[in-house]
Image 1 (cartoon, rainbow, N blue to C red):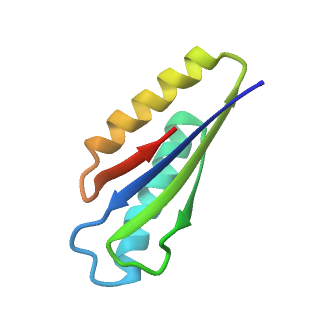
Image 2: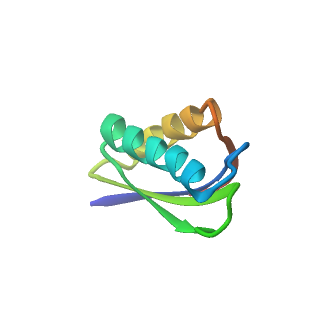
Length: 90
């Protein structure tokens, strides 16, 4: 069993309330889960309006495939409307 973990920072521009931030976070979480079958959660900076630190986990039996999935997710996050991808770590 191989576990792939990605931690990434989203910079939510224009969020004036936690509700605005939550709308973007929920959209990201739901889409990544639906399209890539990964688990996603906000893991830090919950009280900041414009920054969300997210954790993502994927489990499989092929490390090369998981690396490709994480690469696709990172590219998708870079192009995400409404949020800018900040720091990432794998």
